[in-house]
Image 1: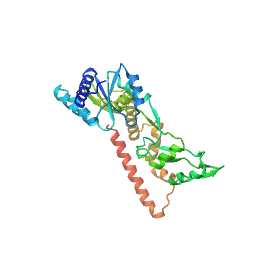
Image 2: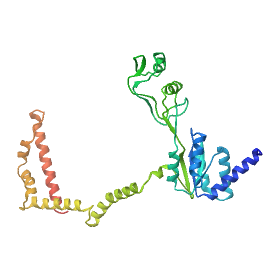
Image 3: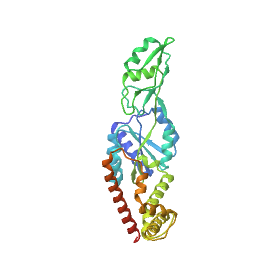
Image 4: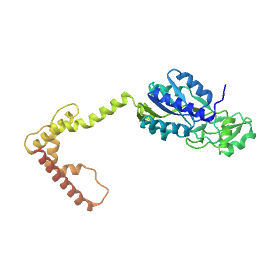
Length: 316
């Protein structure tokens, strides 16, 4: 096999990238942090015939995208440039992007904790025997883990979080987890950004389902139909309870102002006829006798305000 020089290799890479961009309608930027080469081969095999994976140096990818955006009048390719950061690759396809993500998530590989990597989740060492001898106590003491010696081996007394999500794994934590045969992390290719026939959107959009859209529409309808129906005087399931309540208020106001009475109006009329009876029935406050005039004044103010409200209800 003849080894190509660097210039020819770049030209071939640019041609392949251009061909994939023109051949497929969707470009999925995928993150490949901590993804092994054998794992990538498995993903390629699973997508063979339906999608193409392409990796490369970020500087080459940016240069090729800029040249294509200018030469072929595809300004949407420039929107991919902010996503070309770190360990990324491209998945060119015409599949449903949700199906692509399912394939990527399917091929996960369990990995041990290595010093210096960013933890994608909290790492918890469970309580219980470790099977390690007393000579290893220094590792646990360095991480302030509560332990005791039980039957010649170290036992952890309580569950302990040794690494928090988003923090770097230290050398001591990595050694201890490896000694306990704990492989806490799972890695796979992740969707970073999608360019779908010229439209750019983040992977969170893939989580939107018809049920969530339907629920959002129903919530909007219920919160806006009621006031609109009340303003227009249109009875429906949303406005009927409010209409009935407003009608009852008007009927109650008429009953208070006239001799008409019914069960619901009797309590209001009794209160307006003798407010002192309700004050006497109320629980006594913790203050002395000096507070009684103030309480009586508050009752009178409340009575006057309620009468004003009732009078206003007659003209609603």
